[in-house]
Image (tube, rainbow, N blue to C red; front, side, top):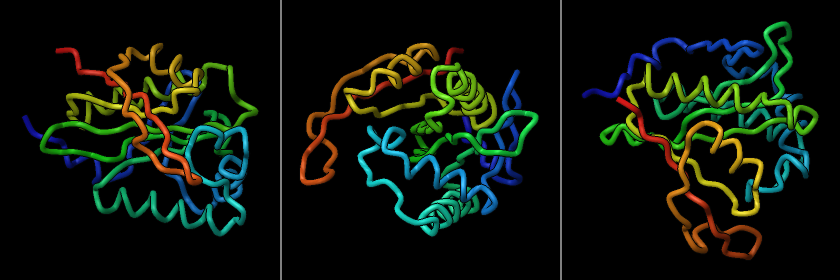
Length: 185
């Protein structure tokens, strides 16, 4: 079994019924800023909201560098008929020798409750198992983030446990719920 490094040769574009998952570029800074400056969108992230557009440009460069360095992949999510980014998601914390990665995602609050992220995550999972040759995918969520727990459940993830006080943010140690999905043979 070999982790497929070829997925990093050219940025892979994914298509679903409604969505286009594509490379994030500096042209997306305004939309990235709109998501990451939103108190609602960032409620469970354990990070401060963005205060300046420069933070969006810095994030975009980190995402692009992660792909160039073959350390992760994060897609911008848009509707097929629009270039406007409405969210993002992908794999990071790649543990290539163990064929494992962590999935993460975000979506602008205007698009919540429409099944968009369920559709996007399904495409990411198919890519992770089918193209990257992952064996398992994990997700770490805030215990109070019921929407993320439902999303993961819809995509077949199983809650494995809780990491107690595993994340430090704003002077407080926070718990994380740990979910995983194992590739079916």
